[in-house]
Length: 110
Image 1 (tube, one colour):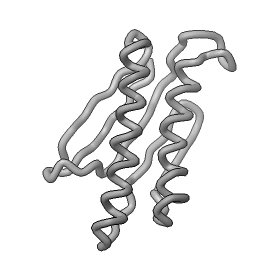
Image 2: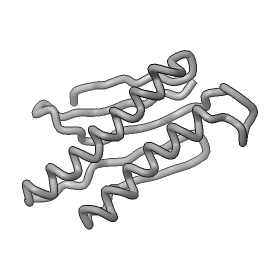
Image 3: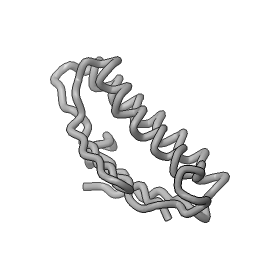
């Protein structure tokens, strides 16, 4: 199972997220659930960098991704980062709605 953990601050802002595990929906290379989760999460990290100019701290290995939202004093850019991350969650929730047996989302406040 793929587990996506979203960590929010007390203010509700997304501080970081992590993705771990394999869906095992299909054979490696044909697993649309893993591919979908990877595309959405890696795409979010890339979009933050490309669209805001801020670079998230991210690490990735097979079956694992961890990213920390970049911090900025610019409220507009911070809002853009948060919007991109909330969009990522919305896309992931769509995957969970269809393939919930293979992927789940957990949220924590830290």
